[in-house]
Length: 50
Image 1 (cartoon, rainbow, N blue to C red):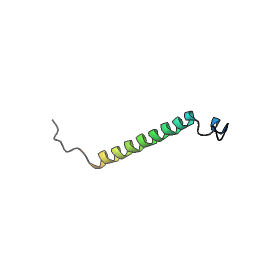
Image 2 (image 1 turned 180 degrees about the vertical axis):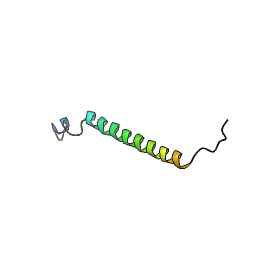
Image 3 (image 1 turned 30 degrees about the vertical axis):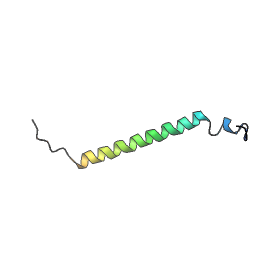
Image 4 (image 1 turned 45 degrees about the vertical axis):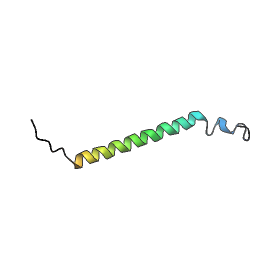
């Protein structure tokens, strides 16, 4: 703010950084869910049924 007054009011504000962090976390969560699903479908459980 000292060197670029008014610049951070619209770009790189802390609220916007949290939006990017939340989006990144959601993308990571979604991709890991897909990976786990693919693993589960390709490696069936071999336990005997009761």
